[in-house]
Image 1 (cartoon, one colour):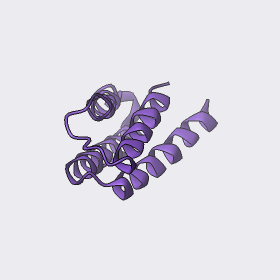
Image 2 (image 1 turned 120 degrees about the vertical axis):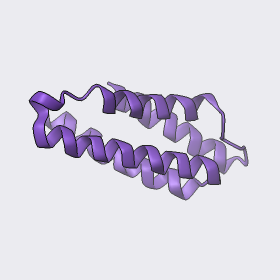
Image 3 (image 1 turned 30 degrees about the horizontal axis):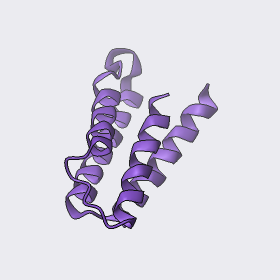
Length: 96
């Protein structure tokens, strides 16, 4: 599931920040951003209706949070982002 990969990438970024590393232009940052973009562009807006529209807003918001956290090298920002990812991931798992 893409959410698992996203959780891993954001978790790795958080660990890197806690170890004092800069995370801009790193593979986990690129991977997390690519996953969020992929989740957004692959929504079926015709069949998904309002749910797809709402999810698109969530994914775009997460992408902004990721970009801000990466630019600021912010462990706190990444932790907030990861919390949101875990919430949505858990909701999807319940639907399956």
